[in-house]
Length: 444
Image 1 (cartoon, rainbow, N blue to C red):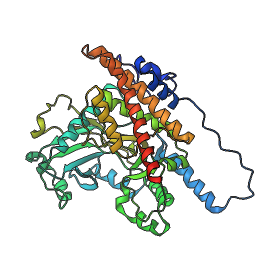
Image 2 (tube, helix red, strand yellow):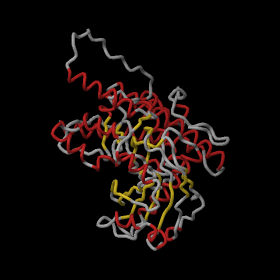
Image 3 (spheres, rainbow, N blue to C red):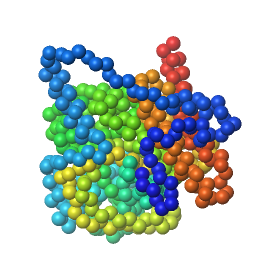
Image 4 (cartoon, rainbow, N blue to C red):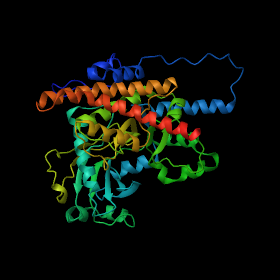
């Protein structure tokens, strides 16, 4: 993370927290020592050397080749060239004045439509009377500003926010008949619309490798032919080792890769964990939110990006009924060359928190209710221990940097807020202890 003005630099390195006790209150020494033991440095042992084999079975050779290719394709900042029909369609669509849209996803809050030829998505509220999409816009705007303008986070991307449109804005809906057509039988239009930068899917070569690796043999041809699988993002589940291959139902939309699968692909687990730590620190103590139900995914972006200009910082909080944006979009993109990046998205359920124990409780509850993105404490394997340490070190150090700056800028805040990130970490430890106790009781 780059520094912003005279701000202290936020970063993902684990080299700086030699003693997390300094981040806590002296009165809570016992808890601090417990935390220190959780973060104690250790070395991941190397795999034992096996005697050379005369010949590797063909199937093992094929698996090793796929793993190697997926390692490259899914590693952060790797670049992949693609000549897929989807990339060609996007390239041609840049020259068209008429905008065409297609559905690429849906959730409880709304349906997602991609504008072809531009890295732009429109999220349409399923319920035109719901306030949820306006909350999505407000939280997305606040978090995006912190990532992109204040702290200049490079390790984790947040889609740029481009606009918000109320149902009564006839100008927007009259100009986008393609969106109205695409939303038929899905949403009641006109409705609330949120415009944002699109996270491009992983390129075709990567998608084919994922199908070959994780799809059951009987379903591979169907998966390759399914156009829905063109919209491939990978959810990163560092808190689960339950990943399995060859399931009966397979989809590349929001494909879940669990820690055991990420390890098999030899991805940099500590780098992924550190990035989650810095993102959560910004969302908790920069944005003062619980980060409820946010998602961490591997997606791509074009290496040559168009200019997405937003000027949404001064929008009043009660501007829900007014047209906001969309922002200026200029330039042509290179859809044929993609870069793999980690993204955080989906802010419709995010809630504000206070800088006190009640806020910490909400943040812990949000992790409990979310999918298992974050590493878990108290695990036995060395990889899980190192993932937890990398996540926690990054989270604590960057949280402290953010809160120390808040103390300088707001004299009404007290130094006790510096203990809040550590209390959050200890809350996660207690949460895992409760899970372990329940499992032991169920197995008794």
